[in-house]
Image (cartoon, rainbow, N blue to C red; front, side, top):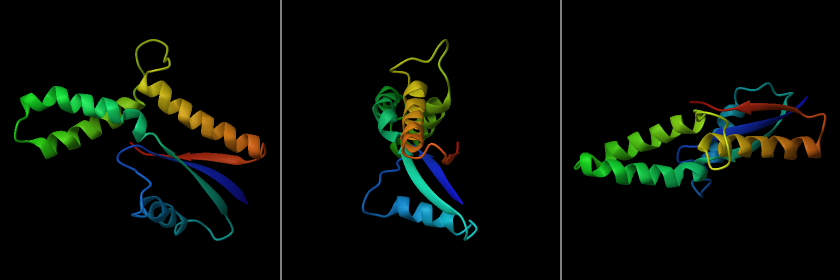
Length: 126
């Protein structure tokens, strides 16, 4: 049985040389039955929210002098929430919610174009 899994993440998930993505996928694989073929498709939407995260940090920094590390963590977590929260009205281009969902839909469409019969699941958190 083959499954295509869209693997979502947005907080500081850079696919760098540290092997984070591979470690995450391998950890998931240890809990899957051996007869499953799972193809993972990463959707890293952190690049969509990083500019907003930096802006939040700049706005709040004057009020939290001396708490840079705590403020940085708070801004990352707040951005995670914002990314999943729909705006008032109809989401449109430029809204974080719209852009994140577009990334997911585009990956889904690529998978289905390659294999229309593919079973697609989405794995995320937050």
